[in-house]
Image (cartoon, rainbow, N blue to C red; front, side, top):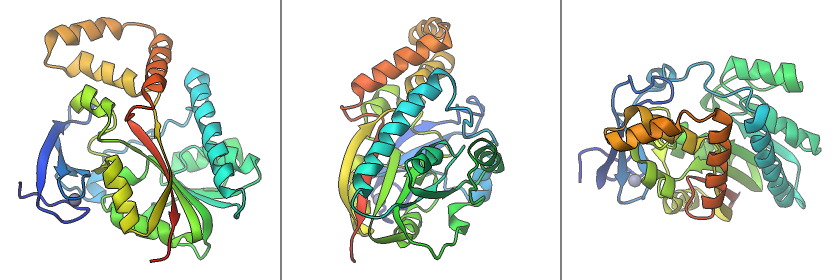
Length: 305
Ligand SMILES: [Zn+2]
């Protein structure tokens, strides 16, 4: 028990899980941030609690990798995205075809959905993403944060890939996502999975923590229970993987680990060409993806409350 209250369920029954830093952009030269685990709702959360203004300082304009649909990594992302499009087609086959994506990044995924004949729109807070989507795919994205977004329109599916973990108030975000859906509409989420082998194996160097940008750290049970409480029923759950997650963990260990033999061993591994590391990391992540993998995909349906 600590005096830090869970921002999701307000319980005081929480415990410190891990202390880590911003390794992605500040290269470990940041303050320390903590992750607490809530024993009541089974989700984790980042501490200290930061305001949106404080968090914005941790988002460089290149936060989204806008060239990720190019090169070998782009090919993997394309295979993953086409798979996601097939899943969407399956769920929307007998219903409508209007989709809305929160956090569209470069607009690449939205362009794939639009190619399949869906009426697809989205929002992206970064101006560079909005410009990229317009210049490369002819897509007009709403340039705003989700909290500022207003629409009279209702959608058959709302998509939020690696978005929910960024909100300071994920419960309000889910309420708003639900309000954008038609009756029986679907919400398609992807988030890192806290109760994964990757979080265990990589510890504070797990990219899924991505502190301080990730504010909530969901377990499978915690996420499904929260979605149920907010008026959704789960219709699909499966493991997912990030091609770069292991590459990043090796890089962070080789630079910041206090375990010297491991640090120097991984420093040698880290000297391998990027393409070799990427292929090996992807293969490893794919093989491990059925077993409590580092990321999870979930589709839920809006139910009457
Ligand atoms: Zn809680």
